[in-house]
Structures are given as C-alpha cells and as structure tokens.
Image 1 (cartoon, rainbow, N blue to C red):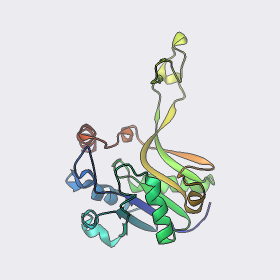
Image 2 (spheres, one colour):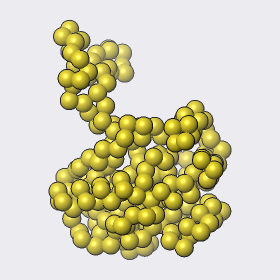
Image 3 (cartoon, rainbow, N blue to C red):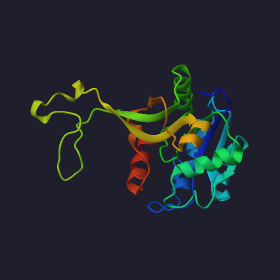
Length: 221
C-alpha cells in the first residue's frame, strides 16, 4: 500500500429522480451534503477533502466548510443518472494527479463520522490491505430471490438459533478506501486484499427514496 497523501472524495450530483434535490435536502437542520461533511472533516488521517459535483450551488451549501474542502468539477458524463461512481473516481485521479490513498464517501449514508474513517485507515495500514469497505454484520436467514426459492445461509430442515450463525457482511455504501494507482489499473474500487470495517447496525440504511429519508431522519435525532 502506498504511504502517501490521503484524499477524501465526496461525489455529489444535482440530479435526483426519487427525491428532488436529495443531496441538499435538510436533515437535522443541515443540507445532507453539509451534514455528512461536517461529521468527517475532523479526520486526523485525511489530508485533503474534495467535493465532486456538477453544480457550484451544491458546493456553496457547505458554507464555512469550504475553507477545508476543495471543489472538484465533475463532468456531465459522470453526473448523469446512470453513471457509475467509477467514472468520477477516474476523472478525479487523472485531473488532480492523485497518488496514494483515496477515501470515497457517499453522502446517502449519513451515519458516518471521522472516527469511522480514521479507524478504517488504521485497519488498512496495519493489516497491509489494498482496500477496505464499510459494512454492517447481519445474522438474518437469507433466501434466494429467484423462481426457485432456497436458503442461502442455513438449512431450514435443521433450523438453528440466529445466534449460532456466524453472519455475513452487507455493504452499507458509506465509504470505500483504496489505492489510486490500483484503481487506474483495475477500474474497480475493490481489489487485491480486501478488508471490512464494521459500522453500527443502523447504518445499513441508505437514502434512496422518501421513506428512507424519513426513517433516517428519525434515527439520527
């Protein structure tokens, strides 16, 4: 793992189909993007923060936080409705000549704070990992979603207590940490030796629609 500058990339776009202006909609009295940025800006491990957006108006919602967070103008292509996040990551690396570690933070999961990031970076370096993703551990009984229904993680003929299940990890989409040069080679945020940073169970919720937003607003109060 390269031991160089740690850059945090926060991609936010203006378009939103299910919730109008989702990324600037207020949660706990702050625009969502500012709420998340305010919770991570105290990181002791991140050297530079970048908000990658297609609209300067969104960046301006950061107010006083703009002193600590750089503006990165993402392209129309990377801000389109069906563009994968990998497109803006590649734009960012190439245009800013980024080396070393990237922390990708997604504001649709507002449960993140700076301690999560710092602990995950420590995990990355201590265990000499290539990347780390945030997740929640689940001990639910999982079944397939197909024409033929069958259990994926237990035998229903010998039903055990859920406590006896080792569990599995569910990506919560909060953040991903990876090596910039490896990303350019593989075009994937997850690669090589992968580690998991476990977050609290409530962070399994992401903001995708109005119901998610209302539920998360209540959980954060």
